[in-house]
Length: 355
Image (cartoon, rainbow, N blue to C red; front, side, top):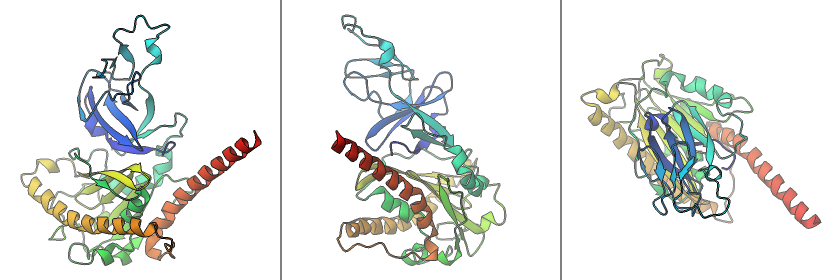
């Protein structure tokens, strides 16, 4: 997590100067803010005095004030005031700003990286860009999700489920899902250095959507071709972002690990520009989400039981079906990172032994 690009939210949440939101990934409290100069900044929300958080929630502000001892910070993280520190020897305000992180926007989503030397994310997502381009996610609209639910399983269990074509019309068998059968899944070849992966899943009719009518209720994304209107796209940008893309709605899941077997997840929706101004918008989105919620509940139950199974000494890693191509793509991303971590730890143990 410390060297990966991590999704924190949407750029639209900080569209105006002074807008900010907070989140946390892997135990690190984070602020994303739009400065008065219009720059997008991401930084730690931990005060550099006594570790109090300087911000909670989201809103609009001209700066961040630590409520504990009233150290104050500008929107770009510089320490501007530190009361009663004039007698502290060699105290230099310029050395006590909030830690800044690298930030990058991809398709309207804000990613941060704790590694100051991290390579850019965008060049390694060109293939995924092409797959999702017709939805023009940067201009898609939606409200900020609140009160993220917590779950008792590892983030990788969630990721494996989010883009698993094999289980789709088995676990979810019935009228809310049968129009997007597992047999119509395809897993395109991707560059070796890709930072994300995806699958196309054909549908039995055009403009299929998750609701009781099986058809799009909201305005479809205007740039979709006939081919795009006859399939869904399931895309993952590990370790934090999953996308479920239909003709009239995108569901995004921002997976935030909180421990080895726990996570929080921001669940949001995006629609075509202008769709939210339709008179029947709320009724239509409610119908979509009623079906999606039923499907997600089935997934969550499975995820919980998989985590229990993984603790067993009898747990194995079974052979893959061709409909599990996304798991192969996920492992191609994951295994080199495991190997690098293992090699680094092994070198550290050798160095300690040789001292």
